[in-house]
Image 1 (tube, each protein chain N blue to C red):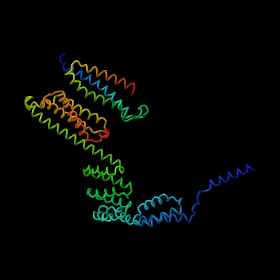
Image 2: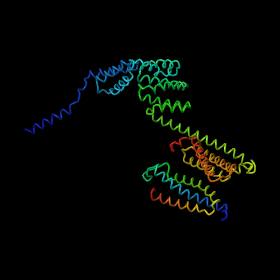
Image 3: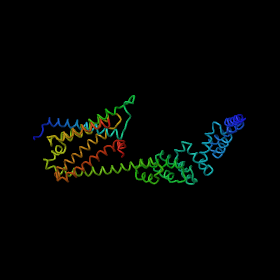
Image 4: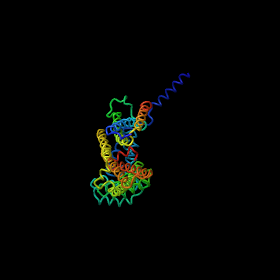
Length: 102
Length: 338
């Protein structure tokens, strides 16, 4: 299989970044529930910061880091089977978090 | 008949419960108590401590229900705890402690230090040493405060709270003087006296060791990088090609994102310091350049060589991350237990 074109590599990088962001979100949520429990936001009248928003931002940052790795990996392994595995892992993690630590 | 006897007994019980437990002091006793308290206060202000102690006790005995009894009891207890040497040491200390100009006078502090050496065991000796140490510290001679603080801490006859305070101050002073080993030795000598100060010093010592290790590792990586660059120069086509070979655009972009985006996130959050992340990005870029130079200079090598190179460079990234945080805003390390 020939090496992917730059546009294809960028697409693979973006996809891996998004999948990694989902995985990072799930990991952050588990860590937060396990080690940094906070009061139920539904019971609070007002909060200065939304932990959900920060979690989402940090996940997107982690996804951005992973996108660089995805770009580099796409050049070496153009079949991108790793991306399939990454997406499957991310979806599974998100489903598990939604069920066990919402 | 039986009902009448029961009613009588119940009445007697109620009457005894309603009666006061002790006799109320008469007007004369109240006046005596007030006069004793006033005399005690005057004696205390005039530093006639034995007279003050006796007068406070008289006041309490004369009218135990007076409004000033709590104050009188507390003053009497405090004076009794400082009564060693018939109050002579306390009077000597008070002369200096109550006058701010004396606390700024080197000759007065030196004279007090000479007198303290002859004080009998007790609370006053430790408190006087604390006053002396504090005075030297304020006078800009912190090294002269070490001796008095050590004397307080080592004084087994002294008050535990005073010794604990002195140990905390001694650890803080040694840290300010840059002698962390001395601070550690002091807190380890009396581990139960000031646990918070001990934990703080141990944490700083641990950080110091990690800092030394991180600097040594990064210095070793720098040497490896330099020798690798020398060897790699002819292989990549000359010195001019080195930057392009060692710093590909993807690595530079990654480092910029790693440091820059994290700094932006921290700024958005509003209460953090973005500098550690900027330094982390630069550190990672430097380690990446060393790794590339290593590969170009010494060849790719077998699997074990590649693994060793990877482990060492990963340790280099951790070292850079630690220094980036520790040198800029060490409060981030608290959350990691370091």
